[in-house]
Amino acid sequence: MLRGLLRALGVYKLYEWWLESQVKNMEPPKHIALILDGNRRWASRHNLVFWEGHRAGMKKAEEVLRWSLDLGIKIMTFYVFSTENFQRSKEEVEKLMELCREKFREILQNEDIHRYRVRIKVLGDLGLLPEELRKLILKVEASTAGYDSYWLNIALAYGGRREIVNAARMIGEEILKGKLAPEEIDEELFMKYLYTSHLPNPEPDLIIRTSGEERLSGFLLWQSAYSELCFLDVYWPEFRRIDLLRAIRTFQKRKRRFGK
Image (cartoon, rainbow, N blue to C red; front, side, top):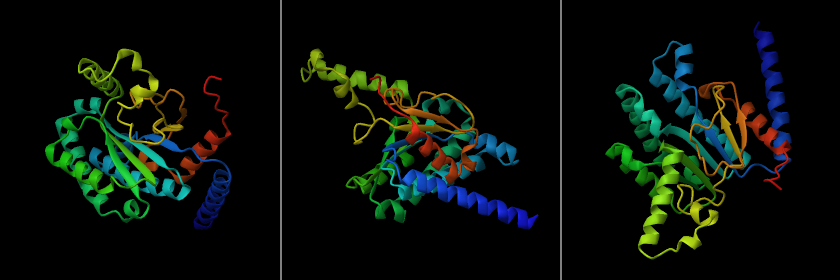
């Protein structure tokens, strides 16, 4: 049995090496967004309490960030917690906020973030978050504000419809103040009022969702108009490097015409 396992692992590593060589020989996507789904179901499958699933999911996100940096992916966006998720039990929401505080404290000391000069930005309505977490987020954002080699966006308390409504409201306020004329509004201007306005490539080339669900669930509704979509039947804590490589290779093989 052990010999068979080692042989299987050897084949797996060989396949991973082959995939990586394929991916690195082609143009990588500039911006990959991931919907981190399946933490609770993973925990249930392993007879664990739900927050251990979220903890495993956050650890996996760190791992995937390292993989993406190694592959030269310039922008990564992780969908962590939506505005709708606040409807979950008080216990789960509080535990998630506690885990987020732990992770943002760790980010401040994360060597990879500073070595690779990764700018971190939280996308969402920070006003919905606990004050201590909000302060930590602002501290992390300020500590990486001068970085421009890579970008990590964390969608937290995020809602795609809310983002679009907020952008429309800000534009309306600019019009009322006389700073903007209605005829000046176009798609390019509208993008400047979205949460992703700080990015050189705000529209994801590739969106990956785990857990087998095949929907965006309000994620980057404006920005995803021409994104390639990849749905994987694996819970987020079980997401492997080989899954990322296969998704990227699939993207690279697609011909993107943007309606032309």
